[in-house]
Length: 287
Image (tube, rainbow, N blue to C red):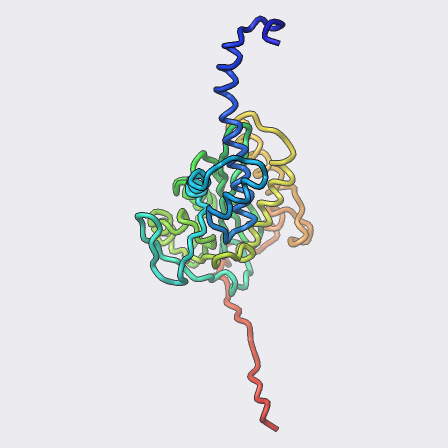
């Protein structure tokens, strides 16, 4: 082959060695991501064993490093107390969203982060949705999971909606959402924080459902050559297709924008109501 294309063997192997590790590392990281998401309670040792079982020759410390970088380590936290994560102390907030009865927009926002695999790297997408209309009101792409990624998505949402005090912001318990910078920004706007409990992704079900829709209808439907290419197509899908034209059965087969336009004027806004499950006391000895 080298003779046919007039390339020396040394040049061929140098080029292969520079390219192959990047693709191999991406494949390994993809396997670790999939195993960690499937087995949310597993630590790095169990994940390393699962990754080895599918054909990767990798050590436990390598897997641990990948999981730490991608915030996938199974950190166990006590509920409603200040806990330590690395060199930082974060407060964990109770789940308020499960008790809310929504009657309008900007009463409950839900936020989440997902990863997207490109050919030679991973990138991350942070989104903020209005839980009532399912509309994407803020999003941002980045190469790291640092707090500035979801914070940029939050800033976009705040700029587009200008919410009133009393809004509830719901997310998982990731360090990005519990960080001082993110929490302080929400509190400055009079926003109440709400977080899902550990190991219960369905408590942020609307965001999880959106991520599945995004990956099924856009991410897995095409190949992206670069981060810029991905950003362009995401903007088109989120702003033009998903928000404006995609029909939702939960919205009586209307798009999020059509649904919001059908609601009452913003001047009638009020915070979400609270709805707690009721129970009846049973006295078996009573006649």
